[in-house]
Image (cartoon, rainbow, N blue to C red; front, side, top):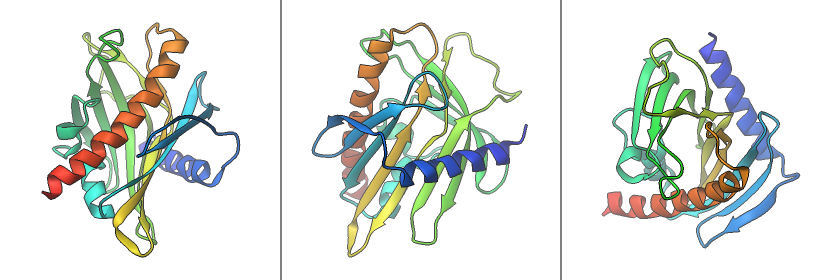
Length: 210
């Protein structure tokens, strides 16, 4: 499997989503984030766009969200139970397995996701992580988890000129949770989950700075 090619393709789609303002409809807005959606071209669901400003410098924000083994994400993100690197393909590309706890008052059972992940630093200081689902021989489906699938997704940690202690975080979520969940439940779960992600990230950044 061409893991590098798949990762680079996911990153390219992130850049295209970032540049394309058309068709997004706001579905949730808080003081920390605006979440919008449009139908996905990848699967029979939605792609979500989330944009907010985190009160910390880009490196501090990146440390909290970067997809690495033993990173800070599992310490603060309630939607991530475990994160492991299955195989490091290169310095910037790896195959990873993420497990999530039950959610939505345990109606959504624990999930697992196997993705190829790319990390990239852009010339303007923006950090990008992009991912998409893959299969890997070391990650057969686990009996206690429903296998979900992330389609091209990721986030941009963007410096704000003249404001070194603030970071624009632009994220795209595009997930098939798998299983047999009513679409209305999925459509209400994601915006609330994304808003919670931004809120918890803001708290985590402050806690790690303290």
